[in-house]
Amino acid sequence: MVVSLRAELVAWQAVAGELRAELVKASERIAELEAQAGKNSRNSSKPPSSDGLDKPAPKPKSLRRKTGRKPGGQDGHQGRTLRQVAVPDHELPHEPGCCAGCQRSLAGRPITGVERRQEFDLPPLKVEVTEHQLLERECVCGERTRAAAPEGVTAAVQYGPRIAAIVIYLYVGQFLSKKRTAQALGELFGTPLSEGTVAAVTARAADGLDDFLDDVRQKLADAPVAGFDETGFRVAGTLHWVHCARTEKYTLVFCHPRRGVEAMKAMGVLPAFRGVAVHDAWGPYGTYTESEHQLCCAHAVRELIGVADAAPAGSWCWATQAAEALVAMQTLVDEAVAAEQDAVDPATLAEQIHRYRSAAQIGVNATAARSSKLMRSHNALAHRLLNRQDDYLRFTTDWRVPADNNGSERDIRMIKLRQKVSGCMRTLTGARQFCAIRSYLSTAAKHGIHFFDALVKLTQGRPWMPSAA
Image (cartoon, rainbow, N blue to C red; front, side, top):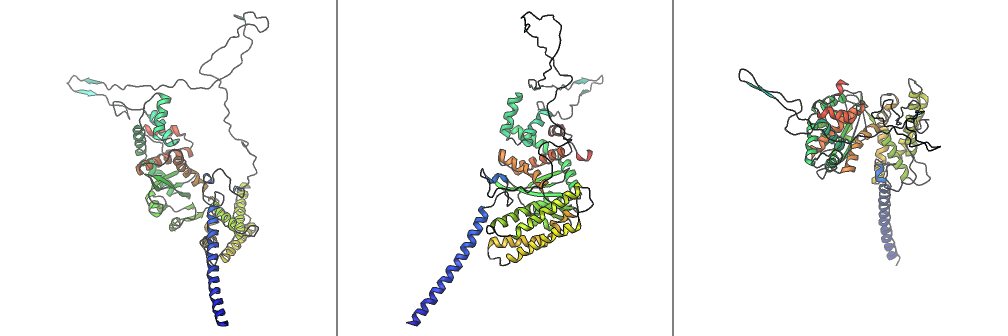
């Protein structure tokens, strides 16, 4: 009897052990799913548009650092208020009908005052047709010679550079679809266009940018600091990748079927780059060892917030301390730059670095078991903060380098906005044409050149070049 009960007890203990193991796995899986479901723009790299109408809980806290400035226009800011001009194009005098007091006629009476009100408007829009007549004359020797056509006039009937510039402005600059671009031209100017014409005008413009793209590519490769980023882009119904390289003066965006090193080589900037590359922690960037790196602190802070959100409510978390230390170091640099100091106070910086390292080391120890997918990702983050400390904190000693990669994200965001407004591109060729013209427009804007002015030059066959700026 005792033997039988002992055997039954052993069997139940085995069953209990199996149930405990399954419960641990289920708990780990639940934690992973909760962390995945809880990701939003505050604690991950997901864009704000993915948050939907409901704001993420807890209430999002901005990662931006306080500047001490009041909201609105700052002192010295050039306003954009509509103001009267000294010499208007047209003057329309309006006479009073009769005296407001005695009702007598005021015709011929002296003018005692004028109140000026100016209305800014467009004249009726109408396309002008210019006919170029290539005259042919016969010499006394009998030879006939015909005049050469003006540069750019290559067909019997064609659209001029300003119409072409407006087409590209609407299609590439403002992200309208080909159909809506053609419709807008027809309704605004009475000019019938087809979607094929929009595509042809865009293709001709992009083909004229080869020298421009080579120039920008070389300037980015020679830059002391440049930002790099990539984002998904739907082309021909499949996922492609748009890569971005940029500085404060130059932008290059390039579409490729692949996301990694193959695309980076095809783009042609990183293989020749020897400055400081600012980017997120995605692995392929680290393969370029001949350049120095600044890992994006904003990405790291969002990752750390995600770790803190997964921790038990009310408990201390190493990730919170690491994030606070990163933000504090950025504030120290901002304050030192504003005060025109040569360096951050060494003692204060050392204190924050200690908080950063100690928090990351606690994170490594706390997640050393790596018993679940979520714990492994937290462990990898803590190890990365330690192993690549110099790449995360380079901005504290080299003030040419920004702490985040927000500039690259702003430049590449236009690609996502285009996809959101007008959908995916139908061909890789069309996507690369779009990226080439976006590179041209972004670079021109950074040099103070308006989109339309740059596009008119491009459609005239003499694109604006940054080397001439």
